[in-house]
Amino acid sequence: MGIVIPTPDKRMQEIATKVEHGERLTLEDGLFLYQSDDLLSIGQMADKANQRLNGKKVYFIENMSLYFTNVCEAHCAFCHFRRDEGEEGAYTLTPEQMFEFIDKHQQEGMREFHITGGHNPHVPFDYYVGYVKALKERYPHVTIKAHTAAEIEFFSRISGLSYKDVLQTLLDAGLGTLTGGGAEILTERYREKMGVGKATSDQWLEVQRTAHGLGMKTHATMLYGSIETLEERLIHMIRLRELQDETGGFLVFIPNAVQPASVNAGIKRRVAAFDDLKTIAISRLMVDNIQHIKAYFINLGTQLTQIALSFGASDAHGTIVKEKISHAAGALSPEGLTKEELVWLIKGAGRIPVERDTFYNEIKVYE
Image 1 (spheres, rainbow, N blue to C red):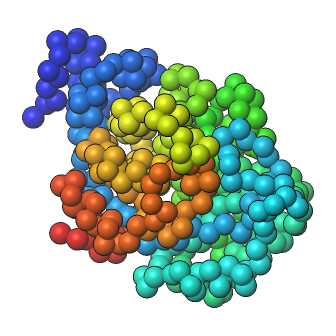
Image 2: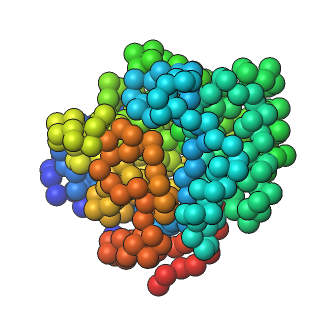
């Protein structure tokens, strides 16, 4: 059955026909969808596109977020996690300190460590390699998902190694995949305005291209809801889509809304739920060659995440345990969810929960 657009809008119907036939949408198509207030038609198209790829399955993982250091040379305008060396609250942990945290909080069935942190120039590249190695030796069954493409660019600068050599060194130490962060919005106007003191858009993409060339499967994010234009969001999606055409190395695309600086920030300081759902749906329609779009409950909140599963999202992230970066910036969501809660959340949306590993291999289907 075709998509029926209730409004007599010819342009919307043309886009629906393109989606129906699996034709690629253009930047102009994306802009039209962003400027339309017909959220349900956009959601219906995205749901159709998602079900074509993933059926009714929605994936999640038992994972834990780890943060070895919050000391960072960059001063990105949207970040409330970073500290300067010596500043109150600044820390750089040893592997032993991290083991202590893991052993205290880990649940049975833990499959992934999701590691992000600051670009700390006060420790050598060996520090970062060392903790990957230490974790892999102590928890051999857990996949290490660590470092953004921006961190790889930073490691290349402090070590004098090429991106390829940095990645190979980390792979040899036990790294499984890169996290998707550091992309923010992949235009230089945005990065300059927001003081993104880290990898340029081209460098971020080049690191990912290099990782994919080494056989790695990786992740990609977008940080929306600040000063970027709607066109810049779409340019970001198209740049990822083009790299995916070239390498096929991205597992999932994760659109994340910018969080305000405080938990007490009012509604006017937060991205509108309408925009969140529209962005999830448009992501699914534009980024047609990355299999999964993630609804990240830390940023969306649990109930909006549930609705996003009918708007093109096929991944609900994971248990996380104690998320820090979005919460440092005023996220209102829980810091983590249990496996049972994730299964309940997905079933409540009329979908089939599937526990996965980092690479979307199915562990258990909860029919």
